[in-house]
Length: 249
Ligand code: PTJ
Image (cartoon, rainbow, N blue to C red; front, top):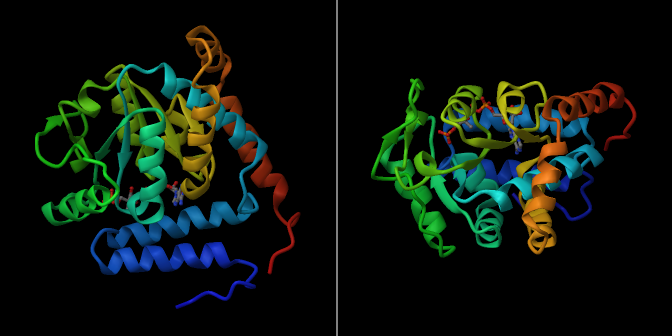
């Protein structure tokens, strides 16, 4: 369905279309559609735009990614559907590896996501060789020995709190993008960006380009000053205080 240019919630409807299309082609899992709906509700409450808190969160996240020696960006069905091109650009800007990690892991979906990134010139890790995240029971435990397993920092999006927690137990820094500031993923992360992946990923790339020339010490200071829980409280209070503040079409 073509969404009219004049529609006030055009972007949101276009995202629906993308998720539905990528569900039909097998990339998005059935539960991915529900996960998208959950995110959409929070996005509506923050006004479907990047908040000032999210800008600060993304700035700290960009600094962390630039100080990492082996950063990895994790992708799943929803993020491939919504922003594969932007993820490819971010991975080049940092530079970072891209690794596929699926909750509903099947050979077919791994292959489809791999092919989607190949079209963008990215060779994704995580499809064949497998190491494990100790303690994690879901299929998310399977990671690439040259990717997440060896990484010192991982960017995760639309994930569950368990993996974030266990990755941190492995000593890795975790950056999460999650529209729900109360989620376990957001709260377990070192830095959580409360924004839609479709806006947060290009914003991260923008900040990475901006900060790239800064001294390591400056970048580390930005990271050190960041307080994830305090920042999430700011995001949450905007959501609570924001109800009814925005006019909707
Ligand atoms: O790994 P896959 O592809 O096999 O599928 C896994 C899914 C996505 C189904 C799985 O991870 C899942 O069910 O996720 P959850 O537990 O619903 O968590 C998704 C989190 O991401 C929720 O807190 C949502 O609010 C948030 N979210 C949803 N859409 C977006 C989002 N955050 C940022 N941007 C979005 N577009």
